[in-house]
Length: 381
Image (cartoon, one colour):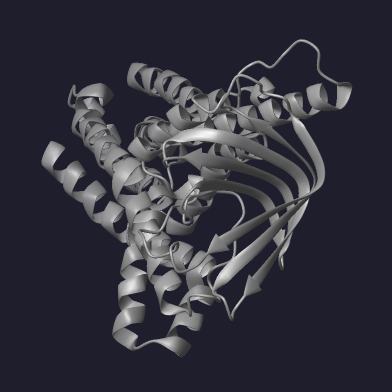
């Protein structure tokens, strides 16, 4: 019975993972792949598709395991096989023990995909797209991620609307390691100088906090001009978005942000300078909250397979149906409930007061507790 159930679940798992992988690829990357087909060969487009597969496995693997358990145990119950096994004196916990062990093994696979393989493949895909275009066409400042493509600077851009920048934070580095000055501005403008191969960035209504020297007076100005040389930047490895960082990269990013705290200035500062200092610190805390959310999201997603299996087995037995469409429909409902918590946490990832990094753990605890209770009640008959 163990061999029979494991073989059925694994076969169904492979099929459902393939289906969900295809659906997620079509839904999320179809436009990008069509654009690639117009620019490169079919082989290059196939390579890009292969790089996206581990990224969608973050979602396809748990959903496939949930669907497989619902389908197999629903049919197992509908065909009276479950009744025959129980009548033979075999308990449900003994019957499903290899399936639970399989789900724990899949948690390890999910952890490897979520924390290392998926982010690296996503970055490799983004890097490939970056290299395919002309350098100047791709040299814009992307939003929502740390930008270290230019020596001496780290940029954080809230929004970039065709060169109109919003919510800009710039860390000016000394010797590429120590932060010499932090500049903060509510808006800015980016212009590409094609002839001289550089980008001119102008910050409007900003403030600058020097972090070196004895005097650390906050400077306020209507404009802060910054020149970025394209010939010296943009040739190194592509710097990933926070959403595409591996677990180790996220940890390093969090340490970097923690070390960027500005030193306290003199007590006698103007109201504008104090307000600017508070605004810069708030922005740093928001970025740290976003990084923490991604760290916890990667780890919590790794346990989704176990929670889905715990709740899928008893629901499949209670469902008592052979129809595939019923099992898939129930799996989609449960997946929607699970990932709705993640979407809520993601919407609050820059609001540290709401602890978004803890919200992503709620569906894991909810599914595991409810699944364990249902499994215990089903085991008692």
